[in-house]
Amino acid sequence: MHTIANILEDFFYCLQLPIKAIDENYNLIYSVGVSEQLEDFTSSDLFIEKIKGLKENYPFSIIDFENNINFLLVPISKFDKNKGFFIVGPFRSVDNTYRNIHYLPDTCIKYIYNLLITIVDDKFSKGRINNQFSPHVKKAVEYSIKNFDSPISIDSICNELNINKSYFCKIFKSETGYTFTNFLNIFRVEKSKKLLKNSNMSLLDVAVSVGFNSQNYYSSVFKKITNKTPLEYKQEIKL
Image 1 (cartoon, rainbow, N blue to C red):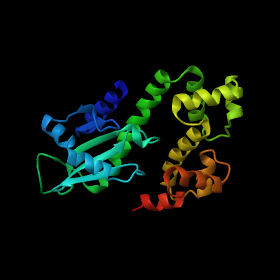
Image 2: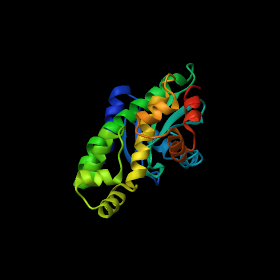
Image 3: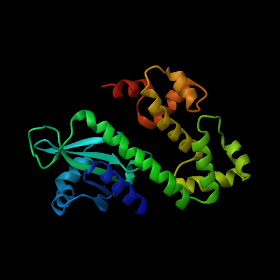
């Protein structure tokens, strides 16, 4: 709760856009800048139905509620879409309507999303790793984040931590919800997305830069995690 509150407050102070967080059952976690009337609006059955109707695999979505009134919907966890959502807005998509609501052209949306994700990554990396993980898992996560672009295996991590492999795999899965390999692959894929925006880098260069030892394996992992190939993702972000 404390970390979510810090994320929302920092985001609101930067942009003055109302923002709230809801859990997997669509109940309010925390909100900043959201009036009582707006709270009722975004908690309505119609609004929740619009959220449920969205596709599962997306970094963010725009909810076009009515009459050019929009909201930005972003999963709280990029790793688990069942952790709830951030809801940013309302904002208007047309410049000549609702002067009391922020106007945001389409070109701004990705920058707003990127700011929110930057704040989320910063807060969770400081809060979640320090407070929720046991010492061995915390060290494994920190080591992986620091050395993701280098060869890392479960054996090398266990040697680094001087811990039994079977025990490490058990506690890592228990505390994070992921196998160590899956966690590392997801982190590397997220890092690679930033590099894919650089059209000068080949897919092989991107793969090697984030720690994969082959382009084919990187592409296979990327597709499994995002339901898109790296090339499809790269073409999509150019649109």
